[in-house]
Length: 447
Image 1 (cartoon, rainbow, N blue to C red):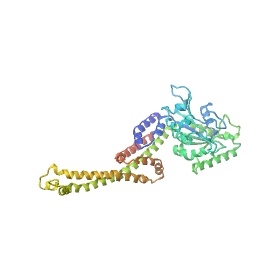
Image 2 (cartoon, rainbow, N blue to C red):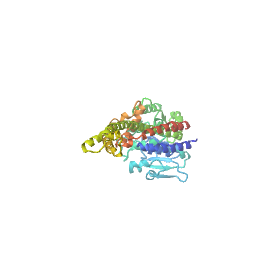
Image 3 (cartoon, helix red, strand yellow):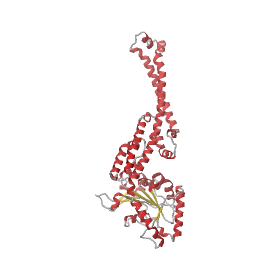
Image 4 (cartoon, helix red, strand yellow):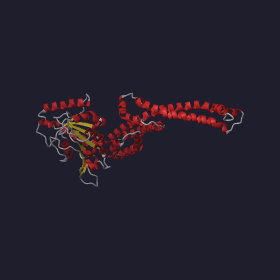
């Protein structure tokens, strides 16, 4: 099975088997659908004038993006190849976010200011047939930014969810000191992209006057990254420069191989596609499994209450069935014969069941009303107040998943009713385990 066939099979089975369950348990399937439906993506982000557009131009082998020392482009530019029946052209944001072929329809929610700052460029480059590169606006300090008119970190996060590789660029003069960079590294990327998808780059190293200056800039970046990521171990940082605007400094010869490896890393993003799809599916299915596990626990507790109500109805209804007609006969002289007397004298008729059956019915209705109007709402309220008790949180991994999906469980428990008391949750739990064991493991072995 080749890569395309494997991707198509994953896409089909996820849509057929998982999407109905995801929607049933209030998950938004748009992110997963977007990842499944399009080509590999490389997202390039970083401080303004950190060399993002210069890197894009080098990858393309021609001047496509404007470059400069100051912010030169405040738009997101998605660069890929046209379909066979299309020609090279630019697609404005208003068209892009309404085209179902692309995974950007959900970006309409960011409003007109964002839509006017996003576009797609279609270029006849063979390597773009299976790759899209997203060049982003430079990150700014909040104290100098006048306002973008849309939520920049959230937009970055949504693009990062689509990306197979996120290239985060710095330059020697602003090695991580920008406010939006801090927010992106500290909050946005950890929530939207796994660590192995992020590539750190310090570009424009030719602007360091000598090797000692380069070492100082590199050390500053390492320190800032440790503060932003909260990690003691520093990820690999690629060092690069542009051969088209380079200053003639001798030590750069030592970094030619590093620059080549960076370009190979970016151009190899399509090879990561299947693995990243499986990672996203795995992440989503484990989130779904925990929600279903919580609802299964809720169902079991509700079933215990229901059994208790049935037992109560039985033990209250049995005396009513056997002896209510004695009371009725004594107070209202009806019926002529009690049920027990008719059975002892072998004169039983259907009329002897009227009062006992009526008594059982009334008792059952009263206990049913009590269960529905009092017991069940109290149980829902108790579970919402102690929602963490519905699942086992015995390790950090489960705690992390639960922090993301607890809101789904609370939403499901927001409206008391019998729908969430059904055996459906247990059946769905077994279906999810079957998908993980059979389908997902098979895909991992084939990739």
